[in-house]
Image (cartoon, rainbow, N blue to C red; front, side):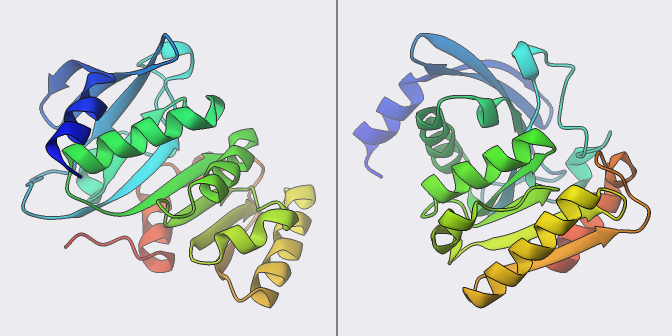
Length: 218
């Protein structure tokens, strides 16, 4: 990306706060300011590339409402973690966020995570930006059957509670369809888990991601 393009992208953002390894920006889209919190891993250096995990959070601009699954000490996980309400915004706003991340950080693979209702949005966003998003974590969401081919080159991880019977059946059906389409996918069923898997907050979730996804820094 040339210098002019980088300056154009940066024009859309106002850096609001830098606090240690955390940065809050406001994404300027269609006259609205969408807050985004970017949490860097401990020891972050620009000479090393890091995977990016985009999760929901900051609903209604509330900086206290982060992604419930990133846990209380997300800096230690080794990824660039992003919290925002981007799942609920106009899909064109996602492009600005991706541009900002790629222009300001040394990023490796980019994943998007959604839980409950916004897990469906995560798959929708990933289908639109299939050339820029490398994988999706749906908790418990799964792809629209009509969009499966758009996920051909993405890693898909579906995590669903054993007791969440409706979504469990949907995930199992989606896994069959994804396998048939030769897509990369994993299905993890949490024993005795319900719909909102709060037991996976923090290290429990990241342990699954490390095993199932190619989330490594270089």
